[in-house]
Structure formats: C-alpha cells, structure tokens
Image (cartoon, rainbow, N blue to C red; front, side, top):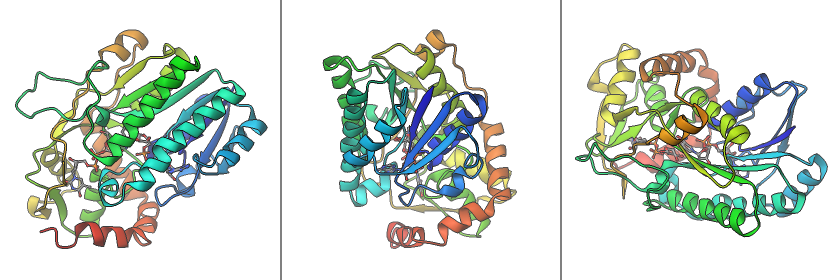
Length: 340
Ligand code: NAD
Ligand code: DAU
C-alpha cells in the first residue's frame, strides 16, 4: 500500500509519519510538504533514511507538481494534513489560508479523481463547529453540530470540509473527514500555546495569556490523534465524519499552571495580554462515534502527556531553539508587541 501524507514536516503530520513508518514497514509512506515556516526537515529526521519513506518538497496547491507525484507514485491512500494552521496568523493575513487550505484541498481532490484512490482522508478540526458557552458544560460538539466558524483559519478549514463532502457525493470519491480537538506533544511549533509556554519559561520570558485565561480547550496527546486517523483510513466508513477528542477540557490558565508546576516554576511567569479578536470560548468534543464504531479511546492522560512533552522540549532544545532564532522572532515581535 502507498500512502501519501501531506504536511508531514509539520507537527501532527510529522508525528503521523513517525508512527506509520514504524507500524507498517510493508507500506510505503510518501510525504509531500511545501516546507513553509511551519515545516521542518529536522522533524522528519527519525524517518528520512527508512526504506519505506519518501519525501517530496511541493505545494499542494500546485496542480502540476501534485499531478506529477500522483502519476509517478500511483498512491492508494491520501491523508491531507497540509494546512496553514495558526489562528493568530490567519487574523493577521488570511490569504495564504484560502490558497493552501481551500485551493490546496481542491487540487488534492482532483488528483484523487484523476488517478483513482482507495481513500482520501481530510484532517479537519473541531474549530469548524465554532465555540460553546462556558456556562453550558453539558454541551459538546457531535458530528451533527452545524458548521459555524469564527476565524479565517476555521472558515478555510470548513470550506475544505464542504469541498470534500461535495466530491464524495458528486464524484463518489471515497472520502473520510476527522475533526480533532487541540493536540500537544513533541515537535509542536512554538507559536502554539503549550510549546510557547514551555519555550518562554525555559528562556526566562513571561507567558502571554490572552484575556482572562478562562477559554477552554479539549487537549489530546498527538499520538492518540495519529492512532485515530490510522483507524479511520483502514476501518472508517466512506463518506463519514469522525470527531476525535478525549474529554480533556482545561482552561488556558489551568494548562499554564500544569506546565509551570512540571517545570518547577512559579505563577509570576503569567502575564495577561489583550485578547485574540473573535476568541472562541470553549471547545469540547463528543467522541462517542469513533469509540463505538472503531473502538478508539485516548491512551495518554493530560498529566502524563504534559510530563512527556516537557521532557521532550528539555531534551530537544536544539530543535525548537533553531526555530525561534529565525524568522519566527519577527512574527513574535509583531504579534505580541504593544499587547499589554
Ligand atoms: P503545522 O502548521 O504544524 O504543519 C503544517 C504543515 O503543512 C507544515 O509542515 C507546512 O510546511 C505544511 N504546508 C503548509 N502549506 C502547505 C502547502 N501549500 N503545501 C504543502 N505543505 C504545506 O500544523 P499541525 O498543527 O500539524 O496541523 C496539521 C493539520 O491538522 C492541519 O490540517 C490542521 O488544521 C489540523 N488540526 C490541527 C490541530 C492542532 O491542535 N494542531 C487540531 C486539529 C486539527
Ligand atoms: O482545536 C483545534 C485547533 O487547535 C487546531 O485546528 C489549530 O490548528 C490549532 O492551532 C489549535 O487552535 P487554538 O487557537 O485553540 O490553539 P493555540 O495554541 O493558538 O491557542 C490555544 C489557546 O491558548 C487559545 O484559547 C488561545 C490561547 N493563547 C494562545 C497563544 C498562542 C494564549 O492565551 N496565548 C498565546 O500566546
């Protein structure tokens, strides 16, 4: 079996490449990545020299490049992780989100139609459902929850989902979609909340907490997400959407305190800054469908996952210090200057 993994030099795609290369030595993993600011060949170092791994540097919205790869590789399964993924960047400059997340998905779907595939899987997000109020802990996102987006990022991801569903219905393309909650773990780009918190503390910098820090996210250790996608591409029903999440809700303040405790540091690192515009209040996934149909359950608790993640950032300083010493510093200055 030949499996194309787009966005494999990023956080979740990278972890998925590691997981699949190891678990299925008889299958070929073919990674396509544009290597944007978020893509990093060092993330792929553990698999680069493996016989069942191939890498192509290409843009998923480049029709010719994608066509050439499909023609050469004749893949069976496509897992599309490639995306612009950071909400704050989408607020600063939405355009590239439309190009990669919408046009790029369309190009991948067209290649799948042309060459015929066994399965196209779209890695989507719980953000397509919008947010839930803090005072209704009884409410959760199910697969039936209406799409209701807040940021240019989530609007672009929702558009991609609708395209996938249109190709599934109109062209009978064998597709699945997964909508996962917030991931954390090794190789997470330090612009995102948990790795930013760890990197700032290790560099003796304050942690910028948006608003009052009361927003809630439903955290999942990245390997649990990888296992879920593997199950869906092999056993999930064509045309279906699967929510992925582990009932692991935490306020941002709780997250920061857990990380600070793990690092043996005090709460004086916390600095409240101006809120994110349109900031979603609460995400919470109901994972009943994937549990009942595919037997998936998360294996890593939040406390254990944070321990492993902090240990990884302590042991892999070179990986993230390399990143934050480059262009990322300009982004950080633009995003956080004059913020309070
Ligand atoms: P990431 O930003 O860490 O990685 C994205 C990868 O895609 C990078 O390697 C980048 O180089 C590549 N890429 C970007 N534009 C590309 C293009 N035009 N062509 C080819 N490659 C391109 O993102 P992530 O956090 O690993 O997220 C991966 C996917 O999972 C995304 O689709 C995201 O929407 C989804 N998702 C993320 C989370 C989360 O918590 N991080 C949760 C649910 C869903
Ligand atoms: O829910 C899934 C989504 O999770 C994915 O689709 C996105 O790709 C991924 O980036 C993530 O989006 P969030 O906006 O939830 O993640 P982020 O790490 O940017 O922020 C998490 C929470 O922390 C959010 O409430 C905003 C807050 N925050 C974030 C940053 C970067 C801060 O308080 N301070 C910060 O500096």
